Length: 244
Image 1 (cartoon, rainbow, N blue to C red):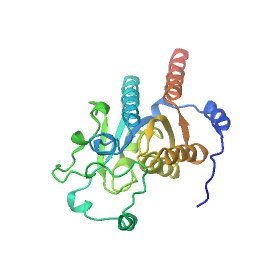
Image 2: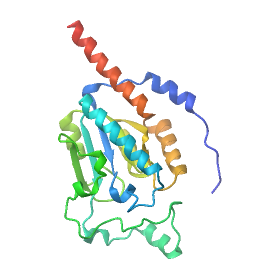
Image 3: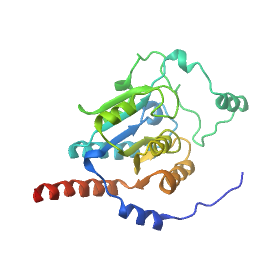
Image 4: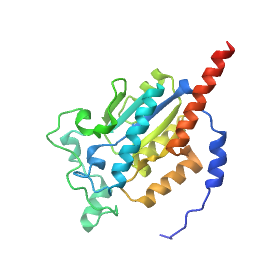
């Protein structure tokens, strides 16, 4: 494969983001796959302190968004032991080489705990992230990437009446990026918070995914930029109420 240099499009992204506005009533926050087994140093090969910083950023962001009154949705993978027996063809081929595709190496532990009970969300989420008492939990995600397939996420989206998602989680190039792409296919908006997403597959794929989303499927904002957009949406509601 050809080695390429990423084209700097930040000036364009900034101009696009300046035009972005949120409808507060139609906005929710979605956290995807920040499992202990994805990011906790006892389980994962995710480099530290990078991983812990992502968790700290996300915990702070979720807390602020709860205070704003935004709905918080957690989507997490859960597989029964019998389902984890299946090895995807790609993983089987890579295993034969004795190599690993991620620059960070193999996880320190098996990615699934065979002793965990079905629906073990509370055990699995990084404890700093909650869940809050009013958070929504979806832990019927069986396969690796889609937050929609095999879950009731679309039913929850319809029930909440939202069409815009502020997205945080792991991995930027995999589950998080797939959510943004599949959201776009459904006519939904995704704002990815760059300070609150990361990848166990390498910083190069993390940066690629941010570029891919910003150029084609959604928006990429920093944590502070996301706060600004939310506060602007709240100010708009306040102004509308003052007129009435």
